[in-house]
Image 1 (tube, rainbow, N blue to C red):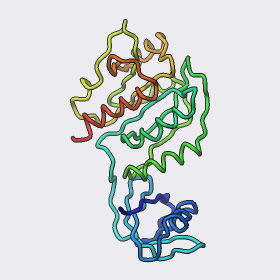
Image 2: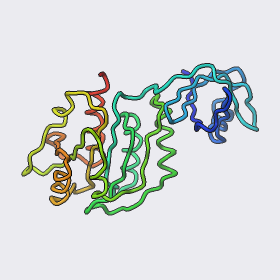
Image 3: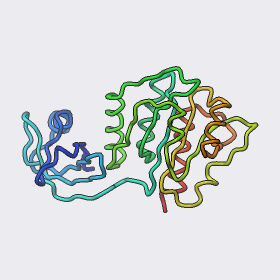
Image 4: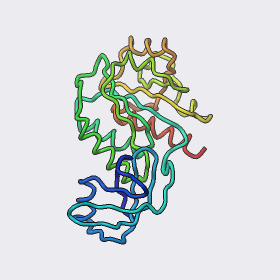
Length: 239
């Protein structure tokens, strides 16, 4: 299996690419790559590049681009998931990793009425996203926003806007029923532990969101977000 590395767009110049220091260290010290080896490098903005390594030493790793493709591993839709920041950082980080694997294009950490944590570690989160992108064969790095207030996100445009909630006294559509037709871009919101408040559900409906159900069982917040992403993958990725 050919190894995949990450290098930002600015690392590419005139058909050559220089790996970032951490990727170069992994290539030389861990994987023991040598000049002449072929590797894959993704740039996080849709570029997939096959390289032949020409320089491999302690000073750095450089390679010549042999082939370039666009949007390898990317779904035919753009899904943004807004998930409220969770009390346990590990659970939010699990969501980040799996969201990449499931084709999510952008992630918005939400600040809701029941959100207890208001921040996360963006640099660590970015490293998790990059590692997941390389592992699963994608070529675009999901956009990770800074935490945003729920009321602000309600104004974000999308062709399909959904709110996941578990309140049995309000009408909800099974999510798969809304995914029978092709979706260009979508925004899905998932609340924190305890879910959205009744007022937040009303605000979302007033802003044009459709409320959806993810099934009969009560799901953890990060699980609910991943189930929603999986529904898009199953219903839309083959189109």
